Amino acid sequence: MRTLLFALIAALTLSPLAVAQSIEDRVRQMETRRASASTPPPAPLYGAYLGSLTVTEQPALGTFLRFLDTRFVFLSESEGTAELLRGGETVARFDWVTYDQAGPFYDIEPLRVTWPESDFSALGVPLDEPGDYEIVYRMGGEPFWRMPFTVTTSGGDDPYAPNPSVRLDGPWADHAYILHDTDESGSWVFKRWLHPDDVSTAMAPTVTVSRAGSTEPILVGGSPEHHLGISGDNWNRVEYELQWPGRRNATSGAYYDNPAFRANTERLDDGDYVLTYDLNPGPVSRYPFTVRDGAIVPTGRQALGADPMTRIDGGGAAAWLVEAR
Image: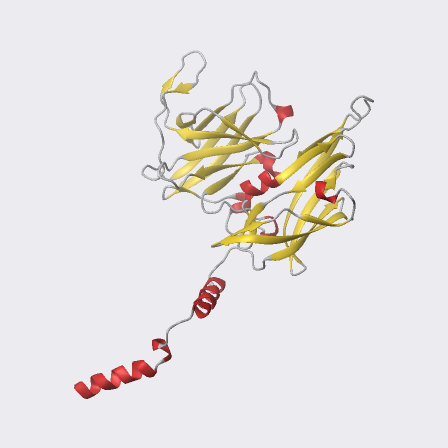
């Protein structure tokens, strides 16, 4: 028995498994493991990406579009290029580099204009012409993600205000998301974008979640919080924490004294639901979604099998919803 034990110890001592693993070897091992896993295609963390679009007006120079710091997931390289097209023709080229990484999350510096060169490239790309635009991101020269949007202009014939007003429209107009706050509160927060031209102070928006086919609210939106999104009088983001219905005002129909909904310890039953956003008065938007095992099933461009070139990501916390038309 002692002979067998000594032989086993000797074999382990000589085996590569017994050699101390270096940090470099461990990094390569983990990279290989991640590469062999079923990794989704690269995509932007869409909420952060929309917040990176900035439209600014320079009185003497016009209106400019910039792409500021943002975050992507599952990138295979730390640098790349991008191009902006209008009507299929390239109007600007950029390069990008990452400056931080945590797991699958990569922070990207603002896009740097490389063409056309000008003394005001730091301001971004001039939005002189209306039309159909598209931003395309590349790694190793190959495109991996794109987003179309439109630019419309109005005014500009007033000698006291010669710069026309510029409006961007894109996929964010019919997309919204529910963020599962993963801290100890575990709240669900509904977030969507509104254009200042489409709302007024006379409106009193309401948010309700009900079972598909029913109008009885299961969750309601609390008081709204407003945040800048695509700035420059373009889209702003509004947020509502979803709560259990409390008491209802008989006159306005609004709910108040709403108990908190905590998704870390509570859950909706599995099934189909509809989130209704009513501008009151104004358009009503409806976002269908499905709950399975207490979580919202990814849908639309976030769904498994979505087109990689237009895929969007929620970072494991945001479930994107598509407005029903």
